[in-house]
Amino acid sequence: MNEQEFGFETQAIRTQLERTQFQEHSVPLYLTSSFVFEDAEDMRASFADEKDRNIYSRYSNPNTNEFIEKICKMEGAESGFAFASGMAAVYSTLAALLNSGDHIVSASSVFGATHSLFVNYFPKWGIETSYFDIDKPETIENFIKPNTKILFAESPTNPAVDIIDLELLGAIAKKHNLILIIDNCFATPYLQQPIKWGAHLVVHSATKLIDGQGRVLGGITVGDAELIQKIYLFSRLTGPSLSPFNAWVLSKSLETLAIRLDRHCENALKVATFLESHPQVNKVKYPFLKSHPQYEIAKKQMKLGGNIVAFEIKGGLEAGRAFLDKIKLCSLSPNLGDTRTIVTHPASTTHSKLTVEERLAVSITDGLVRVSVGLETVDDVIADLDQALS
Figure 1 (cartoon, one colour):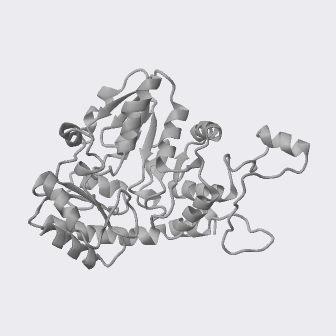
Figure 2: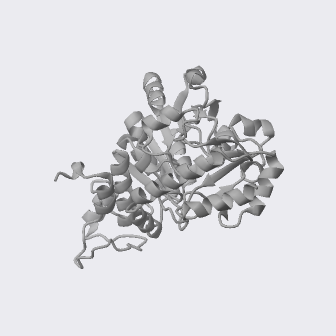
Figure 3: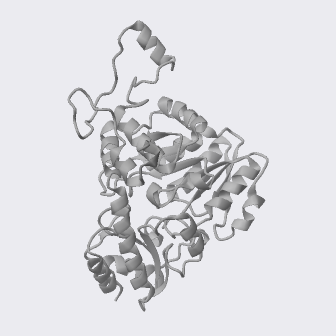
């Protein structure tokens, strides 16, 4: 078979480094800070970028190379670079491409740390951001200026699980000659490939579902080779690269991504369906529930609905806090995408520093609870949520 004919799971499992002289079946760890050269000419040519080879693990490493290659194949990307965390990927990607005076148009519903970059740090360097309402995609073009360079969005969003039409964003980016960057963390390459819809770059926090077991930090950006080269040159100087050990862990995790996501999504849909009928719940948002406002868009661009369920508990802020205190089985943690189900109450924790108005602008009500549904027996998860709601 031609390698391009292989399925997603086969690519995830069989994409690996060439075997060494020891003929190992599983790829070894390359725990080395640097690499040696044959002679002066080999060293000169390598530093002149005349040779494609490993020089220093801040630049590249066999383990990070394998991880990048896998994600590129999964996303349909030309090239990529791996980072020490998801936020290192977001920051380095944007910083490498933006200049003072540039402008970003972004969905208002973005990860809190990304929002902080946009409003607290980039303005110091003369970079402005305008936010559009994810529920009003028809207004996006109103925010585009002559100096707009990047169109940025997450889908599904964190933590409200909103969906935006990636095909629409791709068309807008093409029309206005913008770089479209999509944070694909919640969906992973298994459920959604934004490049198919017109994205130039795709960013992941590999810490989440790609690792899947709450062990290591990591991030990655993949996409257009010319853009990745700029990100690589910036990152090789500034040093946010992924460690070889974490790359090795993440590459092995990708071998089980598909089978894990199938169960995550199956469990999440059952949890969402249960919550939708619970008397203490006002509303539930899950991409593959027909009640989700962007259900048809989610079905178009996603394979399954993901593992994140958002619901609004009756009673607001105090009810949300009381719910967390009653949880027995599920974990209280800021992470997500773990084998273990995790619950958070954004209004009293991760987004508590925002005003009520700021939270409502990104669909975070006082009673909103985010559930990262894990791989436990789903009836046990439902029973824990039920007793905590009662």
